[in-house]
Image (tube, rainbow, N blue to C red):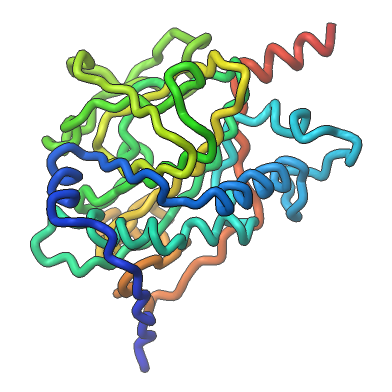
Length: 305
């Protein structure tokens, strides 16, 4: 039997050795202007297309043409896996500049890593005014990797400020590779339904205020959170998650499968090679998952009254 070979994906090298070292030590890296104004406009247009139900998808049904862009966006906190249905979002999953950075930092802590990277998730946050943020957490809790190589690439579609609910991080909190326990946060006005991580000193947290077009890269073990959008504008962000292509992705264990060899193949190679190309790829479901929050429930209740 002939084993399938993965084509080599060439991406530009974007970083200095000092920048790579900063990421390894601090768990994050901020890259201003990595996405151009023209690309941001494309992402904004596609956000509206998705919200209007412009792509065939059971979760996002078509909305009346008479609705304004604001009306179609105002009930969405986050669309999970939009690259499953949108070729535009898939394009930014594969963005050469973003993937060029990933090819230098994703497995930079691993001595024999060759720069190969794959993507397994996209999340398009709309976060309208008065929508909650997410309490302290580590992405590795939700997306397990085998070698601590999970990276989030956080693309600011709008300026992100403290007022509109920017990212807050705890630099260096990734170093131990420890996954903190979680509990209910009991603060539904500030944060959405997701549980919060606890058991650490948060006093060193810093806000990540960035301009549109900036990409913030952060390690899957880095503690981070965001607060409620208290402004009058949206805080749109596309966050894609990546990992070392040489590591298995045990996201789910199917019947008859051992945890040690569980490997989800609904992935997108974005840099270098895919050493497991011989396994083939799972076709993604032609659907997304929509995350709403307390603000949506309050609006629905108000309409019923």
